[in-house]
Image (cartoon, rainbow, N blue to C red; front, side):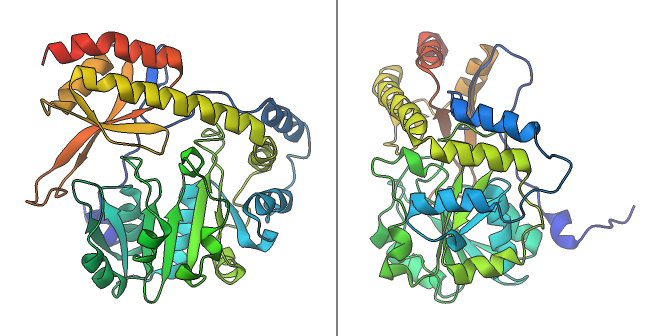
Length: 362
């Protein structure tokens, strides 16, 4: 049968999200969710919203949310664009700034969804390969800047948790385009920023910061995120978003979550403490652990048998993320390893309890 899809869709493989087992009993450390519940204020806000006027459309601008988010980033509300998860903002950005035949770039290895978004748009993808220290070559970055409309940069990066400085990020600003700072894990940094980078002259007003509620705010299930950028950029992106892209319940939940910073910060502190404990424990089992400023650790094992370790853990109902990045090594080879989300102390205890048996059998 002749395909009825656009050629760009036929060619692409599509993004594969992490496993989501539906039955209980799993230690789930594969998709960087927060192991702790959201603020009780969020639950109350959801209940009030559900008891309210669900028969009418939500506020298309999420006005109340924008006012709260604007205060957090020390900007005016017209700098804020709410979205159905930060992935929707990445979609809006791709559709807003890059035509078919034009190019985007991103550091590689990192979040490969950027490639899928570009392919859907019919755009070209250029990779800025990272070295063994998870840094890029400045000269190569300078050449890429001339060719692209969008540079996507997850900061901290996934899968490693690497954080790049403002001076490094400025090397990636396209000559004619926008720099996207994907801060899904921004709240887990040692020093989270609150809009300072947006006002840095290095970026010429052409930086867009994206944030999600899936990680630090324990709200992966509601699908809510937002972008922060100069109003000139936001006004153009508003033309691209769906009319009512965020639902009433999600808007209420996200607003309440932002208003309870103490709850988020307490959970953040617990996660960072557990992250350090896990990082200190894994080398005893033969792992090399990369320094992380996110809610996960990137690890490689001395045997290189990462898929086997992943499968042995899965057989014990422990899910971590086995990741493979083709053409990531200088010789064109494949890089692989394990990304382990930071869970509760009890979940990490379970991982460490079985890790000896898992690794001894390699």
